[in-house]
Length: 513
Image (cartoon, rainbow, N blue to C red; front, side, top):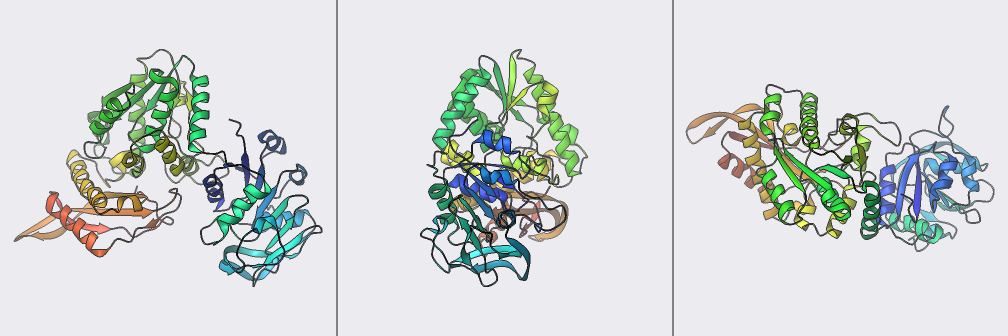
């Protein structure tokens, strides 16, 4: 889809590249990330309002270090280099980059030197976030030095005539106090953007596009009840109505009474064309005795495909499969923008279209979770539903460590309902990105009354995050943890110990499996 205004981010491997995209989207401007090798002809076709060269882990003078096609600078498109991107600009125009005597990592104070649109209304001596081992020791001709820090005599450059700018620090991270203002100055004052990327416009554009694609054929959607598939279902239903067939598969690994609630909500409130398939016996029988987490995921995924295929065969004009795939799903499975290791298999990336000869329709493939939530709010889905924490495709299958049995599912469902219920009750749920309970594959000794017990352990997990790519554990007050622990041990038969996970991502993942 050709956007009215797009900012192109060329990725040089920075850990903050996705954050740059998020910051731009937050300013109501669409952004796309592409590899630094993205052809100039493709850039011309994209017609970006601005180009950002991201940071990267290498030195510009390293053998094999990625460079920049100088033709980009002759396109007449405003360009901003960040960290490694700034150094590329400096070298491209005859400046000099060398290893810094004192590397800068973390916070630094920036001293503004010369006026530039990029720093309009930016406070002098504010804090910026540095992460570099090289620095520019000679500015290229035609560029003015616009700021410095204690260890970087050339912290930013500007060539207003060619609309080329660069900063050594990272304006996209929260630690840079005036970062949002700097990003907005580039977007609005330098690139001339208007800010048309809104949930309302996204919905209008996508309804039109979906309607044109699907035409008079039928589209299928696997409605799990999670935010992504649910918002996708309501959006596509607005486009094609009953030509969308939603299939909800109960795999027996949902939260307590989850399937019944999902079916009732979407049939009663949104009148979706919804098929409910209870396949819990099939899933659980195939998982019997399986403890390896990746094997569990594959069994659950393959069984889901089999059930879904059987339902799809009942329709003879199906051409599209709608999926609520998000950008982080794509990144963690197999990066489509660069190279990254596969951390774990995602249930909603790949699998079905190849086997069923269906075309994929993924309206949210380039979106982050908060953007999908904004679209759901615009589509009038209930706020409490929109703000629900993420739930994995394999469900409780990856939150029950070890063997999956009906009894163990019941234990985890009961414990999790208590935990999540208390979060709502105490007004904590909205402050947390994701919270859940995990059933561990061990038993520990306990005492209840005068009786010695040997029962299960429940681990509680709660993290804060913006997009799930990184996360930190939530700092509960001790009395809240005490209440949760007491309630679970008292009310859930088979549990005599509760622990709290204080690991961040990285190095840990949010889910345990």
